[in-house]
Amino acid sequence: MINVQGPGTTRWTASAAAFTAWRDGDREALDELVRLLSPTLWQIARAAGLDRASAEDVVQNAWLALVDHAPTIENPMAVSGWLCTTARREAWRTSKKVRREQATDDDVLGSSLPVVDGPEDDVVLADDRARLRLCLSRLEQRCQALLRMLAAGPRPEYAEVSAALDMPVGSIGPTRARCLDKLRAELVSEGAA
Image (cartoon, rainbow, N blue to C red; front, side, top):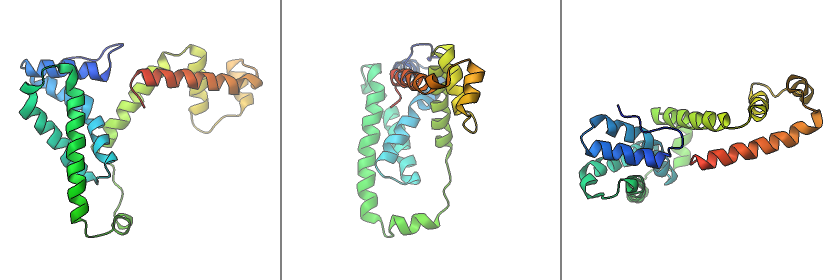
């Protein structure tokens, strides 16, 4: 299996590398491409207001379209945008079709069905957690320790935080805000919204 992710590698760059490797004959590279971009395609489909089954169909159809049209994509860096556009168009078509066929109000039906997370939710959550851990590790140790302590379990009293981190109580809030701003900037640089 190819390893296209490294320090400073964006999801889009890694996707382009996986796409190129797949077109060059590496069958496992397609698995990597699916792992990298399926969460994004899933979000596009769900943002169109589709139910789980319709969103799954949209994502699957986007991947099938890529397999059919891969030779027409000249620039590997365009594969992410191409897939997103394909998924968006398929979601719009499906959404229009679903609205015409919908016999029962979603509010009525939705309240009677159990909520079940699918495997794609686990993938998206794992990807988000990995990105958060990576960005947190880039912060200075003081910020890492403060944010971990404030986020873990029940929120500790500032006096406990002050004693554990040897930090004045009055500086905990402002330091927390600065650390969160730095973390937010790191997340944005990693492509998180």
